[in-house]
Image 1: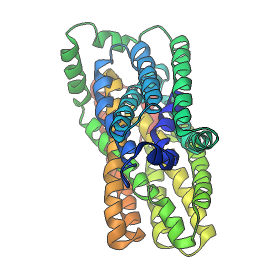
Image 2: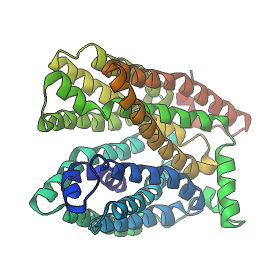
Image 3: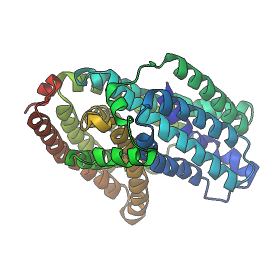
Length: 400
């Protein structure tokens, strides 16, 4: 449920921007910076809090993050100028940067690797479902009241969720985190977490894979509305309907992909998903632009493949360095947002220069590059586990 709030809050300004612009005097064309402020604050804060709060991820990161997220969201409803709205959205992004990595780290500690894919798939599915259901609901709330009430309602629900988190999360602290926080100052502990996280070369390859994987999605998805309007003359409502269908396919793909990853291996699912995602996004943007049924079918395939691979990749990353799992997963979520920011900007340039074929080609190449990176980091990780004499039985599923 925590990830649902993170996803809901990250994009809730999108349907509310017209009303917010008229009410607060947001400069024309700069409203999207409210999303950027949230994303940038998340990108920068997630790895820092992931390292600082690593000694106590259960009682600290998730609960505190939900409180900060609730405060930032409620304050957004009070914003009276563009500068204050940017500040409050940044505060909300910091809260999200505390919550999501903590959730993934908790899953990594509480679920064995052979069953971790399905747990991460469910959590990722909730993140996607927030876009599918939460964003339209936020727009409806704004229509029947005001945009300010939408933020206050979400903020109030976030506070209730933080209370539920405090009561529901286990009180015992994983042994690995107790060892990490046993000695040293906060600064020394934080720097030590980063050193530990990057001690394995496989972590760098994993972060690059996440950057490319999420960027491959956002580079084209950010322009999906333009795509359907340009090629098929869709209205905003029709665009929303198609994106809702694709979002539902992503939820299913995330859950099913997690289960398949546990059964057939994380590397296998990521590899197959990368090929399918690359092929489908290229076909969508270059081949089926004149046939609506084919475009929708290919779009659904692309969305399903991406979500399936994302669950498997995140489960894989969670085991690359168990001693710094919270920090690694925090960095992983930061690289998601970095990929989104970079590829969205690149797609805007390519769309003006050569249209959707260039945008689709960029997304396809990025998705395909994840395949060799994943093959390398899995082999590296297995070798590392074997060399230390502490291999886990779950890695037998990742054998070639």
